[in-house]
Image (cartoon, rainbow, N blue to C red; front, side):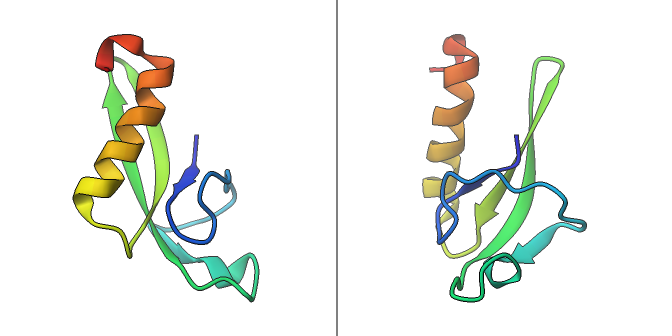
Length: 76
């Protein structure tokens, strides 16, 4: 997936990033957010997101779970 959650790039899909984090300014100089890569395992599927470092763990987890529940309704 590689969907950005929160911050300046919220909802955008960002591929071609190496490492475990990146700055939104690498994509658009006017953006300020920092993103950390997080993987979620659901059954045998691995889903990857870019999570905004400025959001709380609670907020990020809720949003990521909402995205995953769209693909796997039994999670909601």
